[in-house]
Figure 1 (spheres, protein in one colour):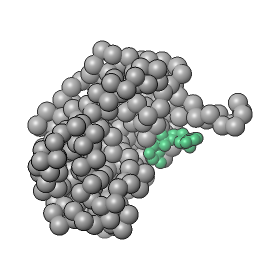
Figure 2 (spheres, rainbow, N blue to C red):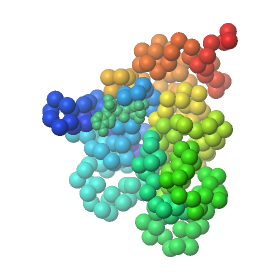
Figure 3 (cartoon, protein in one colour):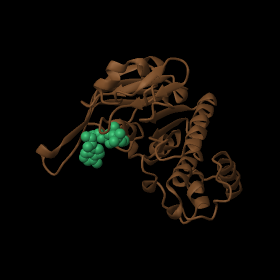
Length: 267
Ligand SMILES: Nc1ncnc2c1ncn2[C@@H]1O[C@H](COP(=O)(O)OP(=O)(O)OP(=O)(O)O)[C@@H](O)[C@H]1O
Ligand SMILES: [Mg+2]
């Protein structure tokens, strides 16, 4: 479903010398129905990759095909193609503030379905279903701007789910959520994947990562993929995780038990 070939991406500065490489020679295939985690230290390129996969930025080097069709700036400038692509691929930003702009939560979640020209009755039905799933009942008339960080995240996820995309990409979805909400969201992602959605998540959260996804793609600080393996196996490879600065000396992993620590067992 997703095919990246030799992708390199540079953020352009005001002149050539300020251009900064964010992805280096990325080759990646993700099949429909998979659930994949992107791991890597700060600045390794996870958000950049998700933005590229969602068609928000375009690489000058390499190619990206979605369901066999090339995703290019030119291709996505065709409104019908762009609309269909963005309906199939949903993206939840690392920072929810960039995503929320409506006057109240109801309008925010209804925005996508309205763009899809569903009738107002169908929109209402869809929005209330999603609000129930996201445990947002009672938030209809709240202003997104005045919600807490975790509440904003839930609304941002609700907005994307309201489009019923086939592929759901979430950038650090567990960040800043309380432990109960983290667990609830991790379970929701598992259910969505079981229901057939392809899920791609970037995260630093090694505790939840192997619950959410069977496959993990690890970025090095040189912006290249250094490993693409079964999550459990990858999380057990201490030497590798240390090398990419993803763990400190207190981290250890118990294979297959859903059990990772950042503390020393002696304490
Ligand atoms: N808009 C931008 N302009 C210039 N450089 C950028 C921009 N966004 C990111 N970068 C740089 O590109 C590299 C990759 O950044 P990216 O945001 O993809 O990392 P990340 O893996 O998501 O990190 P984090 O875990 O901190 O979210 C970093 O070196 C970063 O400084
Ligand atoms: Mg990021």
